[in-house]
Amino acid sequence: MDTKKDKPKEEMNDEKSEEIIDEVEQKTEDNVKAKKETEEESSCEKELERKVKEIEEINERYLRLQADFVNYKKRIEKEKESIYSYASEEIINSLLPIVDNFERALSSSTNKEDSFYKGMDMIYKQLLEVLENNGLEEIEALHCEFDPNYHHAVFQEESEEYEEGIVLEVLQKGYKLNDKVIRPSMVKVAK
Image (cartoon, rainbow, N blue to C red):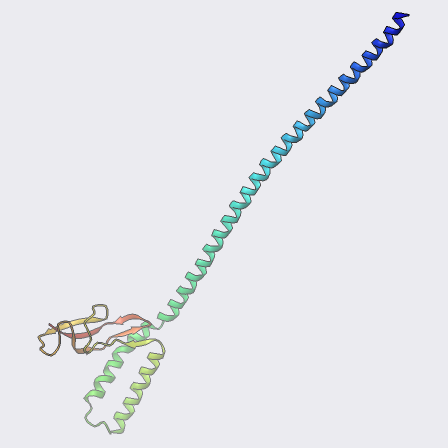
C-alpha cells in the first residue's frame, strides 16, 4: 500500500514538475518575446530618431533654399530697377552736348526780348524738363568745395576771396543720372 500512495505522489510530482517546466518554458518564451519586442521597440526608436533627424535636415535645406530664392528675387528686382534706371543713360549722354550748345547760344544772345531767343529758351527748358523727369540732375559746383567724385579740375588759380579747394568757375556743367555721375563738372579751383 505504501507503493500505491507513493506513485500518485510521484505522479503528482511529475505533474508538478511538468507544470513548473511548462511555466518556466512559458516564462522563457515570454522573456524572449519581451526581449524581441524591446529590441524591436529600440530599433523602431532608433529608426524614428533617424527619420526625425532626416526631416530636420530636409527642413533646414528647405529654409536655406527658400532664403536663397528670396535673395535671388531681390537681386533680380534690383537688376531690373538698375536696367530701367540706367537704360536712358546712353541717350541722355548723347543729348548733353546739345544742352551745352543751347546754353552757349542763349548766353551769347544780346537781345533777350527777341522772339527767336524766347523760342530757343522755351525749347531748352522743355528739353531740360524731359531730361530731369528721366532722372537727370545737375551737379552743383560753383563756390562749392572741390570733390573729385563730382568735379574734374581743369585749372587752378590763386584766389584771395575763396579758400583753397573751392570751385571758382564751372567750365562745363556736370550731371548725375539717378545718383550716378554720368559726366563730372569741369571746373576751375582755388589754390
